[in-house]
Image (tube, rainbow, N blue to C red):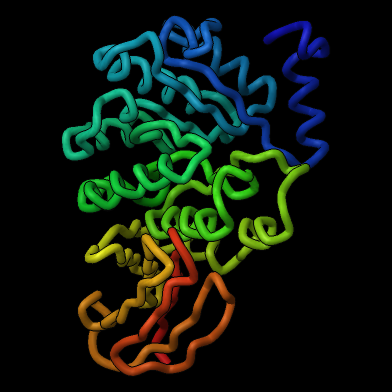
Length: 306
């Protein structure tokens, strides 16, 4: 640890964060160096895991710079074993699949689960602009089948951090990102300065109905079901037979009619809740018409049996 920046040491830092009710997260790399050129964990997995545990670390992000596929296959499981031997619950975030190319169907997700990875970064880093978020949405939509199959309780796909609270996206774009991230059961990790979060974005980030969809106990990730003419429909099966539907609009002049049966709802009416607006739409028969709130916007609905 940098003695100039943290003169009291890692354990004191961990104690100070714990006193604030904050979990201590740390970054390392499964290569000889981190992406920033600092010492990595390759060949030091047991020593680093013991050090992290001694500091009270609750979250480890293990990157993959300065390594290769063979190194990942050996190193990530080695760190997983080392963490499991510590008497502390450390969430283990692996960057293993992010370094294996674009094709999610060829990545060894079973090996990542066996290695103890609780989540893994699948693809590119999110940048602070809408084009980056949109590219990640496209990637998740294109590989929905493979990504749905890889995710489950204790091991999740990670499309990277939320931009809500930054001024590089509009409020509607931030809503879209959080809605789609909740549909695919993504970890909701904020990438912002908490001192500069607007009230509207604070309300979004604290929307317990969206968080409940993201953390639904069924643990079944969703994906993109339909796309046509600038409108995308994403679905996710929820506990108790409920269904979440996100309707994304590329531009603000679009409308869509959502057919419940076509999305697997089956026969019967549905009690519909607009989750972003926190408003009940009533008991509806068969379908609902939704209007775009603006460019790059999403309507997030939850269907339950009346």
